[in-house]
Image 1 (cartoon, rainbow, N blue to C red):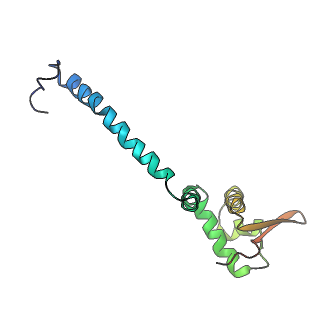
Image 2 (tube, rainbow, N blue to C red):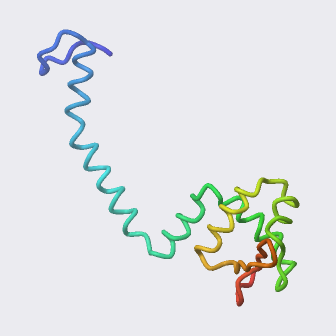
Length: 124
């Protein structure tokens, strides 16, 4: 760490390091304000895309879209998706909820189960 800073009243290197960090805090906070501002300056559509890809169910949602695209406009049974993709139903449900939030799928009650298809007008 080198020799102690004569402007700081500490002989202890750990206390001196803490004091240096404390002195840097205002500049670090100023830097963070710029990051927050830049996040809010992103166009709304881009923020929506960023939110979508940060969702935990994003990967499963992509796989479901990949399966549903060639089946359009008929769609598939939700239980069949879970089996076909080899993932549990709760993951399929989370992915479908995410896709439904963005209006990408239509979910219908069919008999004792549910069917899902790409939303009308959605082309991939």
